Length: 102
Image 1 (tube, rainbow, N blue to C red):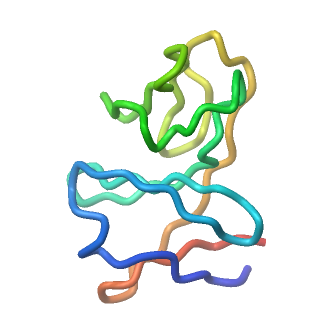
Image 2: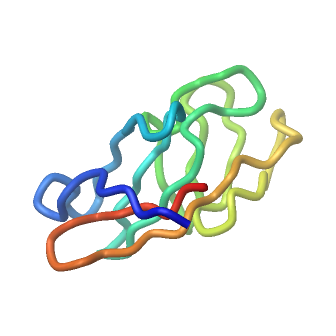
């Protein structure tokens, strides 16, 4: 799978989240205590931007209706969403944050 450099660690400090556009997709990046996670940025319930949600216990809470998604797997953890979001493999190379996207 091709690697796409999407940001740097400096631009994604611990506790932060941001959205990036890669290969025609909006992807949410989350830095949780130095671990970087990447999932589709659009909530499957009502298209809310997940990068604007609160991160708690390894999940992001949708800012509009409270659905929760596991940051590592994209699995929906609570309604009203019922469909998972896709998760992406993150590779940190030096300061670069890269995603494996097919």
